[in-house]
Image 1 (cartoon, helix red, strand yellow):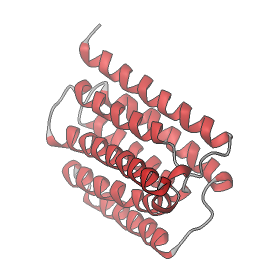
Image 2 (cartoon, helix red, strand yellow; image 1 turned 180 degrees about the horizontal axis):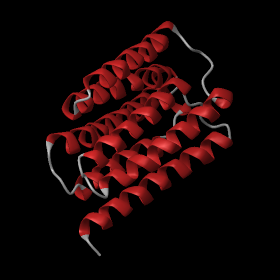
Image 3 (tube, helix red, strand yellow; image 1 turned 120 degrees about the horizontal axis):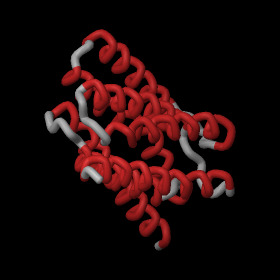
Image 4 (spheres, one colour; image 1 turned 45 degrees about the vertical axis):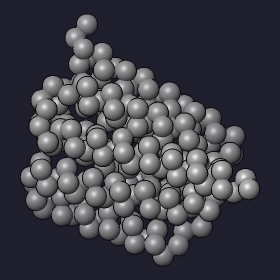
Length: 192
């Protein structure tokens, strides 16, 4: 088996495993996802999938397609079972994401697209970071760790290594693992 295909499949399996833990926690009522974040992540990940596909990234794109669809699935569930405390900064994050999506559409440039969606993805984390800072047990560490790991695997599955194919997945590794670190630290702080 081609090593790129191996890492592409490994990224999908890792991602699906993380989402399985998240879904289990969600259906048990242990976590409350923020719908805004999951909507933004779903749309962006599917855009990332498109850029990866267009730029011939190869098997690394597969995990983005799967992850994007799962993020949108969680978004719909979060509308009913998720965080209900939506504050002004959450709306600002959603607005910033919307404006950035418009800019992405107007640029029609892969480099600009990657930079913009990375910035939007970071904005998409704000509602979840805000909620999780005060309620760190309402998020599942496993999915964010596993997604970071899956995005790391996608870096090894890229067939065409250019900035536009590796910057976004590298940023997603960093975003996810920094969020895991924040959750871990906040849980420890609140135990005292």
